[in-house]
Image (cartoon, rainbow, N blue to C red; front, top):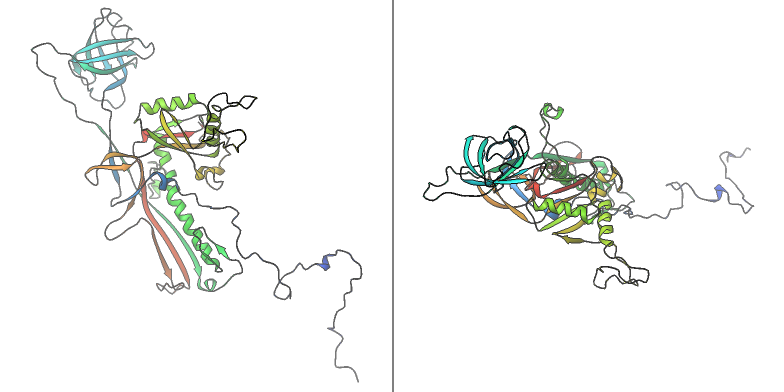
Length: 476
């Protein structure tokens, strides 16, 4: 009788008598059909550390509500009067002369009869002092010179930009009437519009019930074996970063742009405002004290804010460190040849600290590394630290403290940080940072969608007050 036990399939014998390292001697396929388990690192390794880049606005600004589609504020104009594009047809040595003011946006000169002025040639630097004797028209004035030699430099035409003129006082004869006319204070009106920023994370109900073998970890310390927790939290972190980077990079849409045609308006971000109304260092990174003296000289002509924070990329940070380190050299015998820094004078037997947190040169400058400019997924990935590509931003100088402005929404003067964010809010709606859950999973019961959708929304704008006190460092 034939055996009921079939030969195929049968048991297998695979002897390996040789001591040879073959592929078949090692387990390479770990799956549920294999009785052996791999050693697993359940916890994710945080190889990029803290991946968020937001912190800049939290350090230098504040947040406050706004309830309008437009935010407007007034900034003080100059107290004293100066014109830099003035011309005349008068000849050299004339005792009197009529000058015409050609400065942009000047429709009526603020110069009155009886005021004394200084008139300097823009090319030669030679100056006269004179008294205003008449104001013939809205943009012209006539003077009589105090010097016996009259006009020092011959005029080249009333419409030219040959002279600079500023008022330094007045003089009247005895028994005469007072000053004719008065001056109104001049303000500069600025505005910005908030933009709506959104994001969303969605996960279906089945995946929410699926446990994984990887223990996920998020930047806020949350842990677990549900993968959607990680994805949802990373969406939240990414949205929070965008709340800051949108305020930094936003630009208003041009009139004839495609964005305007599509119904979008944009907003004025910090870089845009400082590029247009602030100070720009076009040499990439200032590397010498002479460079910083040039910056200090410009700040003298602006608001002269005593304390400033310089947010820098790695290249500008090293350039500042190297500049300051040259003031602390040692000669061959290890004896300091100039200044020594630090509590223990950076003794040569100690671990040397090659970094500086700040310095004083006319004003106080505090240095802070800005992760946004170093992060390879953001501006840090556009070029390396030493690149000189036109437009590469290496840092920004931000004045510390607050300034007083007239808030047109509030209708009164208010103290505001130089940088601050205005978000839309009222008693019924707060749009600073909205998040809500929709669907039918994860506790939500708003629809029959078998998923959880986490929605994020904010409506905000950044206000850059006193942009003339900021300095943007860039190439080109």
